[in-house]
Length: 181
Image (cartoon, rainbow, N blue to C red; front, side, top):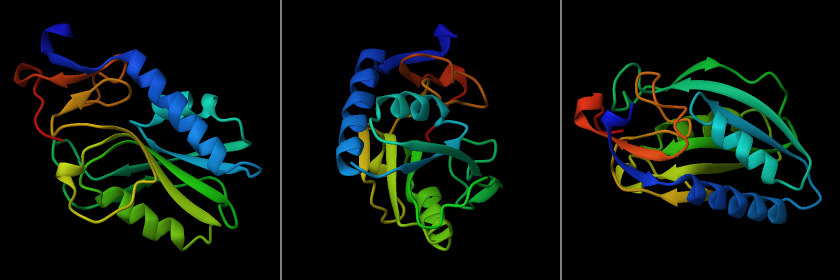
């Protein structure tokens, strides 16, 4: 796999510090309350697990699977729910956990959809934010690391199902068939 990696962008030590910082902030902001972390599959599973272990407040976890990419490297602009929540979020404090936010279309759609389910609150947390790619105005409450407009893999992020297992975040080279996220 290493031959397809153009460069390491974020080392695992930086990721660990990011998770500690976000966990501390969320725990302070929601002190005395239980939160529901909703992981957006598949990419957010690694980040959600690391983040959840940093929280000092009561937590429930559920997952959704959402697609806006199909098999390509650019968003199609059409958001599809592939797997919905298993739990009722009515009256609960919800934090949607994403691996990366670029266009904002997925989170915009989730905000509208989950808002119809009467949660007490909805917040968004992302490990990596790519604001240069934003196509809609969406507020991200908890941002791990702002990144440049590069196609990244590792730490749960993939290209065509590959590279999720890399412990660092890396820029995928052209020979790895990556493009622009």
